[in-house]
Image (cartoon, rainbow, N blue to C red; front, side, top):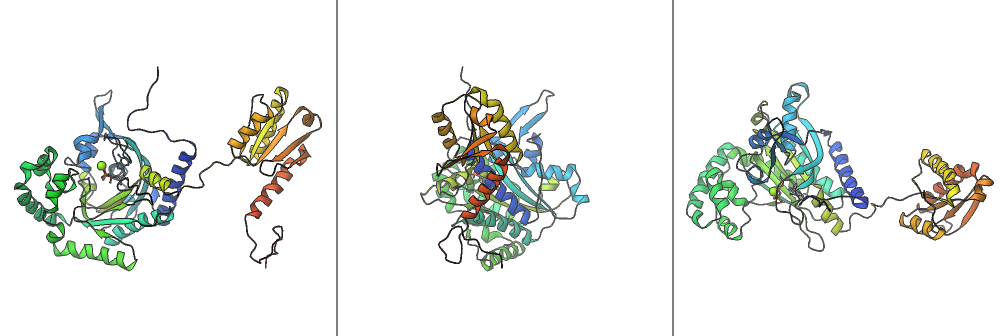
Length: 446
Ligand code: ATP
Ligand code: MG
């Protein structure tokens, strides 16, 4: 019987797995340039953590969580995002009291949402993110946006579409919510069932509705910008002015409200469309929050965070051909010729691996033709051929799989010969800048 993969999940292997690793490596490196440190939190948390932090009115809590009772009848949830766990960890470990503020953490790992699977939307997917908690300066918000922008640039993205909006402070949002209620009260009868629910719990959520008719109605709604308090407006202006100064293009999007309940002030999303027109939705998003830490039992400290979806980054990078070098290149393919040579060939492979070569060996009795086909499939540079004769004479045959040139060398010279060959291979890639034609011309260091 076939056991199928769980709907909305996916396997990642070979070149794709290397590409994921590459993306994560770049993101980590940029996060470390901004002095964020890694934090690993559990995939499983108490359900209450998410209802309190992500919020009762969010789509995530209302319909997307993988929640179940464990054997002890406790309600637990597979994390739908990683910010909540970081906040819980800051409280659990009292990091707010023992570390200098802000606490700057980055994370990477799987998240789970019960959504309708489609392009760029999975039920298990990977997020990379940062949180900066404990200092409320708008420059921390900027640092977070710029870290995301730098990371995308380093991954090769050219026309990043940064959308921003301000949700203001509590007072701004109270004023705005009243204005929205007044506006939508006239239209709510014609809107979807979700919006009717949103109207009661959080009318801001209506702006996020994807139903075309509802979007049209939302277009005529009052704009958040007009309800910001002077303080909230000034804070937003520091951010837009600084983005201008650093020539980071952005678009103020009044309909941007974000899917989580905890944001205040700046919120943002990174969008990207490939040359072929592929757009899988936001590749990353985030914002500032004021009550998140206190909501999960910590002191009242502000923070800002950003989360990027690795699957979406991967999808657009693949489509734009930004993932070119993600092949595992095997250095050496060791070929035992005949059953009796396998033991000796195995020993040679182990010596080569101990000397940091990337080595594959065929441990079955295969024909020359099959062996060379396999070496080619592995993209190996050299074949190390070990036959009965070679073993008898303490020799091996080295064959360059690109030029087809081969040499027989004493086993005792194998490592030296390989070191020289691989060193030369590396030098050939460096172009001589004196303009000479001789590719073996090496310049003395000056
Ligand atoms: P969307 O509006 O597309 O549903 P979201 O606002 O729910 O996104 P966030 O909670 O902000 O997403 O998560 C941060 C990032 O994680 C998103 O920008 C996206 O790149 C990625 N992401 C979110 N949900 C999924 C999913 N179901 N599958 C793959 N990636 C996802
Ligand atoms: Mg969503």
